[in-house]
Amino acid sequence: MGKKIFSGVQPTGNLHLGNYLGAIKNFVKLSKDKNNECIFCVVDLHAITVSQDPKELRDNIRETVATFIASGIDPEKNIIFSQSKVSAHSEAAWILSCIARMGWLNRMTQFKEKAGKDKEKASIGLYSYPVLMAADILLYDTSHVPVGDDQKQHLELSRDIAQKFNNDFNVDDFFKVPEPLIQKEFSRIMSLKDGLKKMSKSEISDQSRVNLTDDKDQIINKIKKAKTDALPMPSSGEELSKRPEVKNLIGIYSSLTDLNFDEVIKEFSGKNFSDFKESLSQVLVDKITPISVEIKKLLQDSNYLDKILLDGSEKADKIASQKMKKIHEIIGF
Image (tube, rainbow, N blue to C red; front, side, top):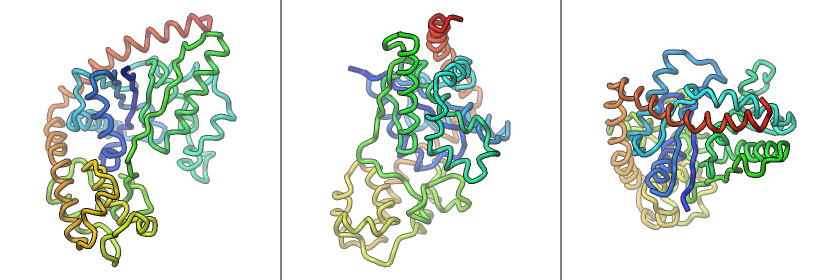
């Protein structure tokens, strides 16, 4: 039986290899399964929980759409839309914030991490955005949500909100309780400069990440300079726990080639790091360069990208507004 899948990506611009291997590669795979119904949302309402430059945000929204398409998501067969263009998301978020409990939100660890020590100055949106995420998911009768480790807790909140709404209003299964889709054989992608830090666009050094818009020479140069250690290539998986940078590079190779860690270790055991880095560079160039070329090409035609968002938003709005109408009836509006 097919799955109804919803996933959102924040339009932060400059998407990188961590975003691709952690999410987009999996989206492409899910979207190509004819049994699945996929909805991919550019979550621009989530993006404004922190301050954004309006022009940059507009450009980043288009770049996110371009990245989806360049990576292999077909806009004719899947819905790609912009969250802010479907007003049901904002309305449902308010209604569901009246269902969610303060205690549930106080347990969300990501707010504590993002707000840091000065949480009094954080926006209310940053605190309550998991409720908006629940609205995103529940409006479309989503059965499955692809999530990374950092979003598992938020999906659990979506499940709690759905169950509480159904119980409070005595409407069995009105909101479908979504299941997580956890990627198997996936290694979290870390910085090329520090194997203990997640690959991030906010890190100052561009050498710390492979951007999806990097060209062949940039990719080769970054992998050549990627941090390793003085030891030879590992001969077993047990060694990797104490060698984070090596583990990260092997994880990247593993994710790109669909080989498991043991197969990669066996292939390169006893070889020089330079041999491994050369192979890794080639695999990355083969995978990322066509995406990079296509992103740049698509960004030349903003009207085409805007049309995809408009068409997708109309399709999404049709589904979400019907759900919203039923929510009004249930609540008594």
